[in-house]
Image (cartoon, rainbow, N blue to C red; front, side, top):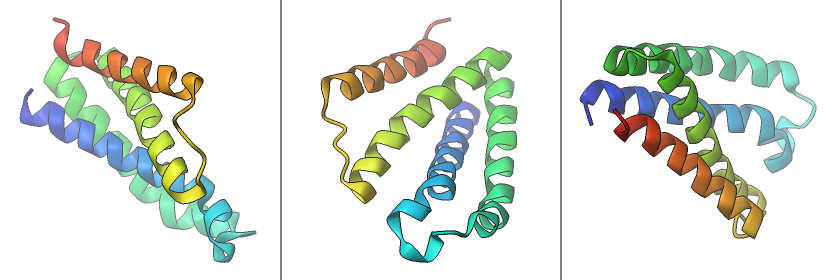
Length: 115
């Protein structure tokens, strides 16, 4: 895997993690309740930059925008279950969630390794 592809993936991981906190901090910490504008102000710029540069690097590494799209999707479904279980205690160990997480991992692997 090239450094450019890895960097793009890490940027998507960062962006997806920040999106999780932007939308779900209200459920984790009382301080964030009823502060949607604050969440938008604090998180939007870093999220936008992470996705912009993530797309740039993955497209540069593969020459395909579809790869960037599917990697972003796959990373979102990989980060969401872990963060949701850790912060909200919702188990990711249900058949439905495990199958969907496995499919997301397969999608990312197809994009990385299928030439």
